[in-house]
Image (cartoon, rainbow over all chains, first blue to last red; front, side):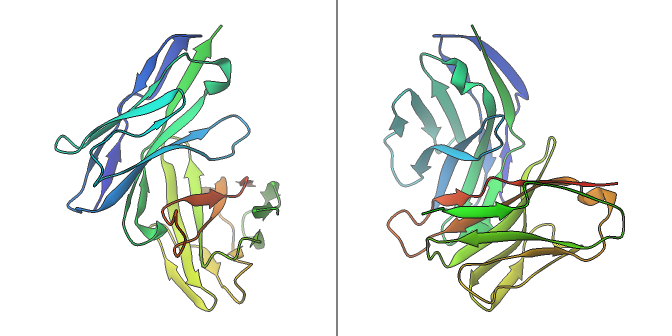
Length: 115
Length: 115
């Protein structure tokens, strides 16, 4: 069975600074995806970034980038130039190829961006 | 194009009452699923469906029923609500045949309280 661990329940950062959210996972699968989802107070689940395990290049989406270390089973999210709108819960998730029944979420962490 | 629509957004039930959470999508996605989100637990899969007439259990199916008579709708039924079912419920779809087959599209969630 797959597991996803987010060891930091809560973090805060000053506006315009950089913050890194950590995530580790455990799996015996060889083909999978990793995700970071953002959940603002509106409750909406928003996909921030995704990484295919077979790609060595780390994914980047504007201010968001990941550090994917496949051998270490680590998948951290770096947010550059933090903005007040980044304040949210962030969930790391793993999905083996084949369908969403194989999607496993971490417990989430609360990020607060302070002005 | 509404995407994934969940109704109601909020609901309060008494123990033992029954109700149905509605989920409708207009994206013609075959894959639909229901998750519950509890504090400190992340999202957990309740039931899922790979197409009309086909459903299966996820990680936490007890106390819930589903059916899928059409591609568009995937209702979640609570037959006899219990306080342990107090949670936020999310419906999601997935275009497993599409170019971004790993991407989930989430509804806006239903906050359910069982007293």
